[in-house]
Length: 390
Image 1 (cartoon, rainbow, N blue to C red):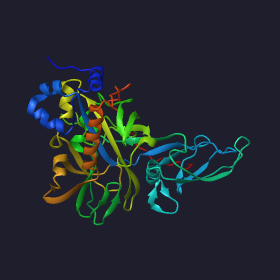
Image 2 (image 1 turned 120 degrees about the vertical axis):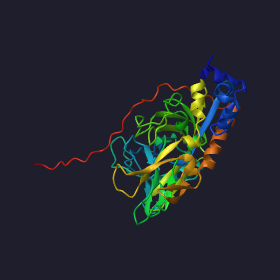
Image 3 (image 1 turned 60 degrees about the horizontal axis):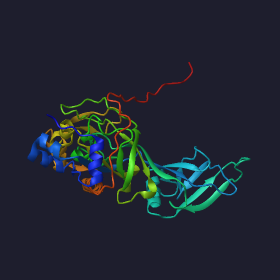
Image 4 (image 1 turned 90 degrees about the vertical axis):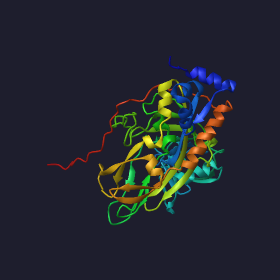
């Protein structure tokens, strides 16, 4: 007879301090020792995590009203433009936006982290002025404590698999996957592998809208399917997509976050990005769930894509397991090529352990999704149409 558990039963165990929690790496040896059936009975929660660059990151801020009031239409935060086409004193600052004076040396990701650290941020805003919002400019300083709401809202995070990057051209290229050396000089990849959340729940049974997560050091939530959500990708025999598939839109209170788990990044020749720490607890509801979370790097594959080809559908040079990528080099068509991760495995492990501790101490409870993600969603691409009059 198979073992079945519910969210309510697991949360009751967490409340009573007797839930068994392990990370997605620790569970692999446990399953080898006990087998799927006994491990399912024993383990209640498996923690997953990732800490990698997530360009689709930003924060909604409400500054509070001035006297007389202003409807901000142009906003600079430490000389970084923020989008102000919302309400009078609301704005959204994107992580990849760059400083007007410093270029890619400083951007929206830096502003967000300065706010999290409690630093003063220079706010400059202008307005055309209206009868109800007569003020036309303001120049002041804000902190996370002086403003009203400040919450991180990221439209696309935690990719379910991502292609490894290579460059077959004769010149180095500068990308969001780092610098790719000419003549297939290196391969960069970006995932936490067997620790990565969506690898451990490939069919989104426990990860969906409303799932409570660890987000940059505090509790957050999955608010929607992420942009470019492509659950209809080709999958292997374990149900794992072999190319970029699902993504997550996430939200959390910026004021409670820690820059230990969220960091600005500057990629040479490309621009600003943001390393975001995400941890997702997966309840072990049954044996099928245990099979999913015990997946190993040796069983997870991705494609090697040539980033030197300036096309949407770039050529694929082969498939490789994450165990091979983690080894530091692979043999591709007879050539030994260095491999390196963009995602920090060290930080990912730290997040998985931090979330594990919070659950064990009864400080973090599981939230069942209020709605599941679509299973066969397809990704559209922008077609360029010639609109010239005949």
